[in-house]
Length: 128
Length: 197
Image (tube, rainbow over all chains, first blue to last red; front, side):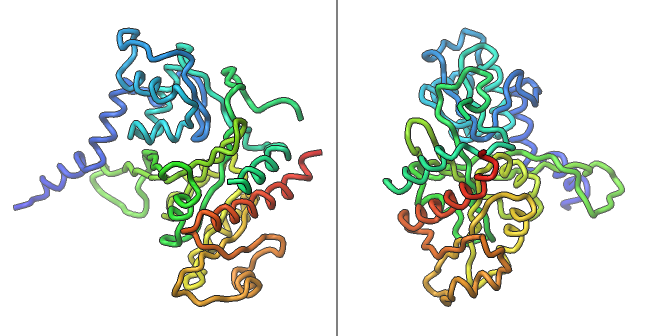
């Protein structure tokens, strides 16, 4: 008797629903960062050692601070946290707003890197 | 030329990150290539997409939107203190073109991996980068049991512009993968030259 009612349940509670709802609860429903763009390859680094949770931070913020003691890309932070990018961008925005991290956005899409960067990459790849 | 990229958050002391895309049909070896050249184990990041469902009329109206998770595999090569190269495998499904748009934004170039047994699988990637004007090269992944062809014949079969480099590679081998990336970087640098006065 897997009836139409069960199927309707599926519509609302399919396997995607859980992971979507819970992370956005983590950002208190916010979908956009308070500050910053946070491209996939924006590099992020913590400006201080790991703060205590009491400083108005969520556990995920603290985890990001721990990860970013060395520069990491936004994509790497998201992969380490195992959270969707949208969520991680909001969390990073909070930290940028508080001055706990620095971020370097990549070259604007309309600009190719200067020739010396290309040459550095080519030489670097050759010497690996 | 001296001014750096946007460093609104005074992160100018951080290295510059550069993005390269690895595209091609399903099962052509994109993740293998990323894994062979990356200094970290390839990682996966996910984007949750809300999309309006298309094509199906439904009377209830409750299925107007669905969420989809699009996974992207990527790797990293630290070039020096100044530059880090990130390699992103493009998601295979054609309906995720909007993710390709996000990925391609600011990408220095792309490698289209091809398999001579299924050349047509690389057509959508080639079309996409041609349309966008993203510098790209084609790397033929030489699977052990695939027939070998001359590069010129493959270029012809793919209807490539004469200036698009085509190389043969073994996506499993780091040395081969790095050669592919070097070819791409040289090509992208040539393409960028007119803009660099």
